[in-house]
Length: 399
Image 1 (cartoon, rainbow, N blue to C red):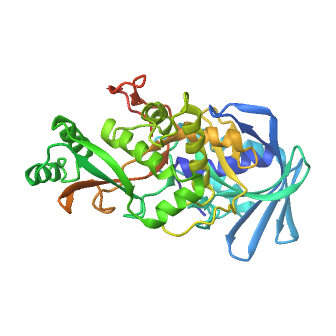
Image 2: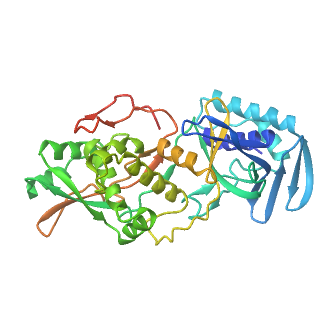
Image 3: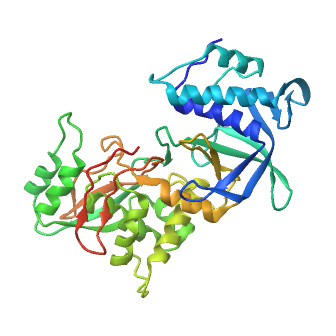
């Protein structure tokens, strides 16, 4: 058997070995620093590569392996730890896109592991994606055991999406204001890059050069509006409208962290709070939105506000340490989401957005909503001290 995979896939095996040998995983703050007094004790790790064949790997000095309820093997924890180190060496030293190691794959086969990814349960209720690893844990405070599903992220690998664009379900409509004509609309829609794709930055610059502005109207989809109000109140569509105006119109679709829009929202008060200091109000609203997206909020079907998710994210840091963000430590988890997510522009053609169109004698544009994790440090685009100037940082090496 030969298992071949990329750094992200091998990171899941590294996490498996690391958690199994450590027997616990610590929570972390928004900067991925371990919180020493908050952790989950791990009772077992559960893998089900083939439906009906559930393997359980119990932590301890002797790792017990059970198939369904029957013990089939034991292995020394020290051996697991040794192979953990081998996998880490593979990850940090490999220069290939995908790679393998016969010694490691033979050891995995002896543990009844034949795939790098435990076929993650596909579930729309599990933060719109997959649970990469399933743990039975014991809460350090209550002593209560529960089974929790986690998604694996890597500080040395590309980030995954939290919330994917889905056509008009996730598009937001804006009216173009100022002196505009059909000729200007045609010029705007003709701006493409060298490959014929929509040139978002050029189009936004074109608007500004023509002294045209955009005014948020509403989410295109009725379900999106209903779900946003259910999630965070009647002002939430306007807040999203302000966020997307910041990303597209002010920052021209450049790489922009979600947290960087907070000053802009507070300065322009899109929700109309009229508080003396409303920065924290907007921060709380956005954190609640991101957390709701993690727990299952989508715009394609009506959301009842309930969460079926009890897990979170497990992250491999650049130094090989592993930390967790889980829903039972909600404040740290929300801070992590706000700190590590950025806006992203999806395919404009596929999602029917960024084209100007005329309706009832007025002109409109649709901006799409999509969030991706940015685990690496990157150059940032910031709104300058509540000013109308946008500062661009040339270094954008982040994911």
